[in-house]
Image 1 (cartoon, rainbow, N blue to C red):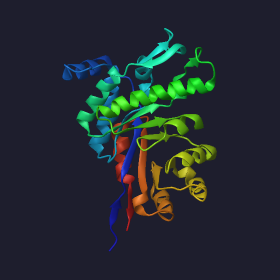
Image 2 (cartoon, rainbow, N blue to C red):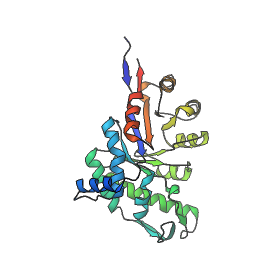
Image 3 (tube, helix red, strand yellow):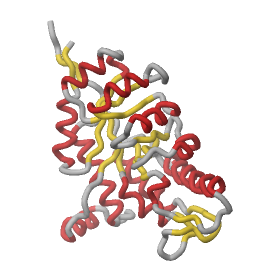
Image 4 (cartoon, rainbow, N blue to C red):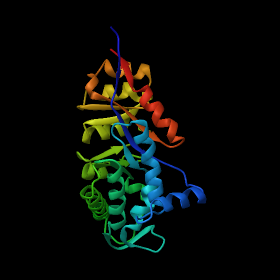
Length: 265
């Protein structure tokens, strides 16, 4: 007898908009006694719809975490767009964020923008290698502090795939995600990660590359029935996950993802 089988669902962050003043004021009033600011509001707004929709592996945060990261850096100019001294970090605000998120969902992940997307110009370090070591080292320190405070791991969202960043940072608790990868991007991601995320339009490319790289898990972004069937023709069901990254109307987005993450057996 045919039955409907759900696939695991995983989030890679979300980009909630800026709330109106009344909504923010009401949220802050509900969270008195905590570090309740606009960034914390957006973190909460990125996570709550995922939990409410039943996403199995939720992930708060997104590209909007850029400002929080920049605020955590010492060694930048007043405009926070150039490094002019030794790069150091103060993870205090991010630790508060981590504690808030972990209280809502144990071992929840958090998404950060990739280092190169911060828009920082190097005006201090002698060469690119020194600068890359400094910025990736700062990221490691911030992410480790958040994991120590209860975060399960981090997604790094990249608009382009920078091999230097991936080779240094990618690991069991740090996953690089490109919302719109091309074939070269996927090849680089698969060289360093045995899980890969891509949409229906890149299915054939992913499985062509699987002849060169090992895939332990494929995360299909915004899957449909045809795409799931295609993925399951190449991998076992326990190697396939439905993935999502919400940039609009997240209340309905995550519900639709869960509804579409099924196959017939």
